[in-house]
Image (cartoon, rainbow, N blue to C red; front, side):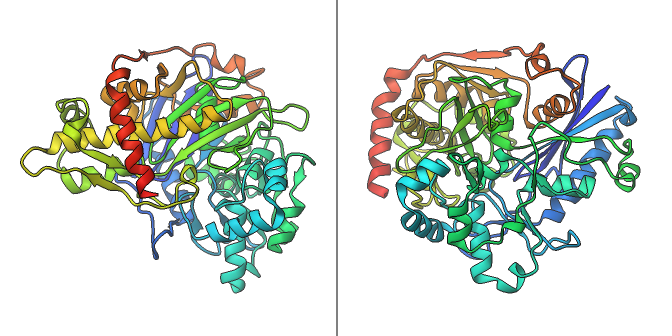
Length: 491
């Protein structure tokens, strides 16, 4: 028996088939090979086509099945992970009305700030655990205010994973964690927030049916099953935002456990059993995958927009002919501190941890007679690690004190230099695991379909593949202090 996991990323779609017996990936496919474009019509805007996600997901599944390593007809359930905070809107015929306004889009920041001030800071933080910011609810309000002809046609507004679930099953559902990440959820009343809906003048009917995250969200349509070589009627039994799902994939489910990822964006995600919030909403609290109206399990999320996106930009502009593996080796040849070169990696939209400020990415201190490619790429990795430290210190202010951080052996954590720098700069050891988002989505599907009796049963084969502990913390501290002052001056 197998499980299918679909991860709707910003750069590409990744799918994996997991063997229930071993809990290991049999085969994984990423599609397309080239990174998907983010459409930016105006500065601070970021959109992608939901239909492109759907096309790419189908192509990835077909390539997966063509491997011949498993029988697609023995796939018993489907799970979906997806880029958080995006907005997808469809009409009554389930036709997409506009491109998705995705997570790193900044156009709704002012709307969110107005809502924060009008509803009241304490009321928002106490009930929503966040400022409305540029989250999904604010993006929907932007459509209402600026594209009324589109808004008038909306039947349902949803997150990216809800859209893929709709395409697979024809059913539109959501969950409490999904609504919380869109900042639609009132944690005190355990219902859709009347404050948010009333302030923005949003129609309550646009909210899909709410179901438990681990549950049936529809059955695979016969025509889709036929096109993809799967069995009609199998359930979509799990849908989660990518960061809670990343935590699930690393078996981060209990209070005090912490996960990290460094893909297009960078995230540290810690689990709490309290309704905590940051007074400035620089880090955000959402319902975790195992949250319910009877069980408080929240995820405190630090998000940095410009991590892998910064590294990708540097690659494309300074060394497009090199692979990421070659870049990592090149960076490792430069000395600690990159000969004084400093990078602020904040060039991918307004940063919540910087109070929604946009500094732009900056490369500082270039000496034309001293610095070379290796120094640039090490400085980029160090700058990203410094941004994680800056954000982690905010989390520490709010009571999160990780003793170890778990991460998947993927993206920037494929670089031993980055992993070691991350550990040296934050002072927290890191455990690396093989699991990734698509594997986590597959395991989540097994939990949601009752194939695993509970979450613990889904991770009996979970094991550390590499461990990093601090080695150069003292050497990095003054370098980080200088970097932090540069950032403060830029704000």
